[in-house]
Image (cartoon, rainbow, N blue to C red; front, side, top):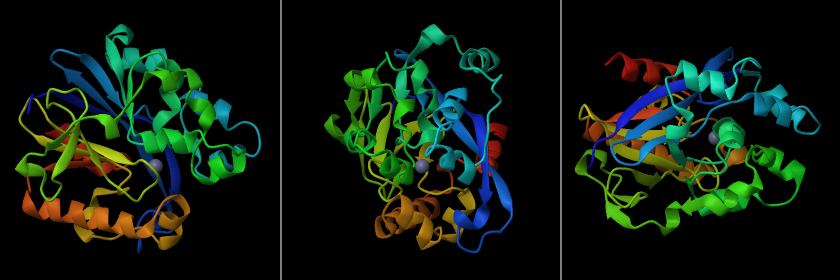
Length: 279
Ligand SMILES: [Zn+2]
């Protein structure tokens, strides 16, 4: 695989009881950061894996019924933490961003798309189609805030489903197939079914030779993979499909057992992020 730079940075967080994310978890509310992958490709420039929260999320959840989204998962993203401030603080030149790779279209992953709608967007067709279905209440129940992704962005979508299928390196087994989204073998989208329609992760190798699977919301916490412990059925059935979700969890557990060096980064796991950034 062509190696790429990867930084794994938080952009906002939300709070909800741990037990909603993992059976047997605490009833106490826990902070879940929204992580963004800053991928530096040696030729293509910088690509963002998801965008985290943004003040645009607060605007989109101001009216009813969207306000319920904010009530159920209270968000911490300072209105002062503008997109430009976050980029500057993170050392990212806005003009260097070549596009985004979206794991799925939940509001906590796409809130920054208002700033990136004019650049290529690599995503699942199934996810974008689900986002564009009519009905505010239905969208809200699905975790979607369609206003966060301007419709002008649709013309820039490049779908995972249309990218060439390639074999994943053995380091990612039992995940066997990826979609080569840039056509050079550097960034391989991996379908991780169950969390919601069109939910994908990303396999890559970093410049310091670490094999990384960005696992998005296939689990909320890395320890759920170790314990092979799914969220309550209430959570998985509300957002997606329980059986595929659990099959994906079992495969993640098998991948960790097969290769202790494989780095699996869920999008809301502070512990996994800290461990990755400390190495
Ligand atoms: Zn999600």
